[in-house]
Image (cartoon, rainbow, N blue to C red; front, side):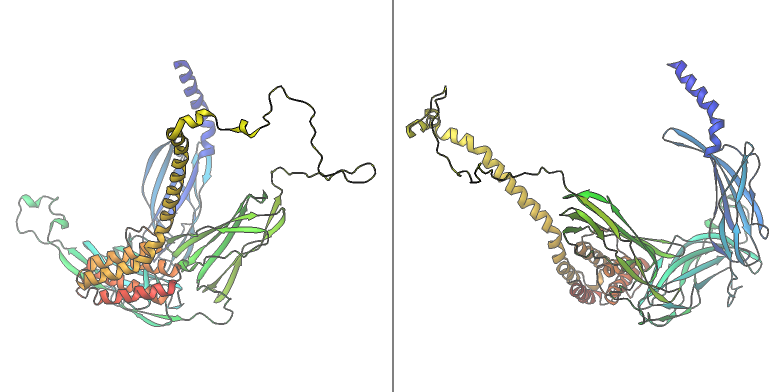
Amino acid sequence: MKRLVLLLAFSMAMLAPLTVHADVSVSLTLDRPEATPGDTIQMDIHVSGARQCDAPPVIEGLDTFRVALGGSSSRVEIINGSIRSGIDYTYTISTSKSGTFQVGPARVQVDGQTFQSNTASLTIVKAAPQASPAKGPLFLTAALSAKKAYVEEQVLYTLKLYLRTRVSNISLQLPEQDHLTFQQLDKPREYQGVLDGQTCQVVEVTYAVMALKDGDYRIEHAQMEMTVYESGQRSRRGFFDDPFFSDPFFRGGRPVTVSSEPLELKVVPLPAKGKPEGFSGLVGDFTIASELAPPKIRTGESATLTVRVSGKGNVQRIPDLKMPSLDSMKIYADQPVFTPGHDLKGLAGFKIMKWAIVPELPGDYKIPPLSVSFFDPKAGEYRIIRTPEHPLAVIPGKGKMIMVEAEKKGENGAHKPEKQAIREVGHDTLPLHTSLRDLGTPSWALNGGLFLWTALLLPACGYVSTFVGLRLKRRSIQTLPAQRARRAARHLIRRCRQYGDHDPKRLSTAVREYVNGRFGLSLASLTSEDAVGILTSRGVRPETAGKLGDALRKMEDAIYAGKGRGPAKMADAIPAIAREIEREIL
């Protein structure tokens, strides 16, 4: 056994130099796709499948950049018993020119062979002039990706906090505006930038802003509150003169609030010209794909049609498609599954819809296309996307066919008589009973009495009672969600009367329990954006959904921000909103 292990190890060592090159891969990544002149961008080169390279990577597309090596590190990964090694190189790059640059590819050599990475696009845009760029050691700026948009078209709202001192406990308060929704796209990013020739730290956070109604909006200033630490002069030396205790975080800080400038946004309505019939209000860029599996089945079997609608925009507006009725087919629709998402360029997501198709007769069928319409804000026009027509071949099932033979005729063409007389041809070896007295009940059945009949009937009674109990239990379980949905609004109204306006936390919990109970969900938390998305996807008008979202936002301010205005009159307003939601759903 030991010799076998050594032989296998020697074989793997001999084969490793021959196969390692096939597993080597190189990738290039940037910490962000957009920056301003002078900003520092982090670039990472990942080499997988090699323990070392013959030389550092050679990277193309950096002629106009200042490049500094941040360091390199090796790594070893063990996955399912397989050992895989790699090397990571970190660089910082910056440029003073604006434009769009293609960074890469990066080329590395391993044992004399060259491997190449992908390329990455980097856009350097000129920073907008600041009203007071030298205003203290820290300040906040705000910018919109567009100054004009359509209703429910998403616009990126970016906040940047410039720091030349050390801070902690940063909190953000967004501007409040009717008919405007803010949804954070990603975690705040921190990087090094250059402003007025001086290096500073930048904290950047991006939101997707969507207007539910047309008009001219003034987005008021956003505010960031933080604790600022400043180093001071030391009057004498002592125990706390140790460099560890000289760190600014061990000194007393002072609270500071900075504000961004207000912004203007013009929102125009969607054009009435060319609006498709049944338009759901979907705005953005979307695609559709479908699959029918299997394409050939037998009678009585089922094929599944799967349709996926995905894209970027107000994805909560993706409609539930309807399959038309088809001759000689039974169609069973599955519950649609909606998955939201986002990236640095905006909100995204997809919805998957499935139908089980059961043909009743053999033949060649055509599953008709399904279509979705949306408004493309970049082109300024409506578009319709469709699935292809899917052929479905249905062959006869495997069941046995019963052949009925026609009645034979006699030689002269006359039919044989339907009935013939029975005549006795002999006796069997066993005796025949020719009297009804012979069919009487045996004596053992009469002698058994009540105990025998109870033993015979008890299993049947137990089976019947178990079957009825299971059916009743299943019916009660199936009707439980519908009962919860009907009682959800009544429970919410009762809680509002019980808690009033003095307990915003319990009031917010009651709203979340209402949404969970009404739509069969199990959300552990509910934000205002989540509530708007859930309600609009279930058929509630955006205006009504926005009312509940505004109410939740005010309660969040009262709970987490300590705002004194709190959910004023919310205990009276929420029941009216709930009744309006119930009317629109029904």
